[in-house]
Every structure is written in C-alpha cells, then in structure tokens.
Image (cartoon, rainbow, N blue to C red; front, side, top):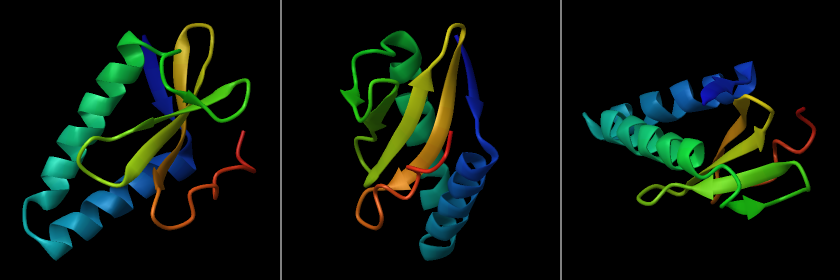
Length: 96
C-alpha cells in the first residue's frame, strides 16, 4: 500500500528527528526507525487503530510519545500528522 505524507506531517517528522538527534546523538535515527515500524503496522492493518473520526485514525508509536494520524484512502494511506501526544494532540484537526 502506498503511504504519502501531507507536507505539514513531513515537516513534523523532520523536526522531531532533528530535535531527538540534537538532544542525544542517534536518538533521532531511533525515532525514525520507530516511525517506519509504525508505518509498517498501519500498512498491514489500516483499520485496526484508534478511530478519531469516521475517516481518520491514530496509531501510536511504541517507544516515543507520538501518534501517526492518517486516513485510509482507496489505494493510499495519507499521513495527516506526526503528532506529539504530550503537547497539542489535536493540532492537526483542521488539516484534510
């Protein structure tokens, strides 16, 4: 299944990787590995994760306080946000 990111979500991912690498060298790389693992779970089971609206779901990472907010479209998973769940977890609500 094809996975694409909204531009805002890609920026959030890049900023989180940069922040974690700045905080502790290599931690951003570990964060990216966790995101890739989460994307793999979403691709395998797109309807298994917590629904936020009828068309939008959230899959949480296991190690970091992040959730991937996404929509399961016909032949594509659209990542709407890479959301830090300890900050403003609903900041993505006006994206679509």
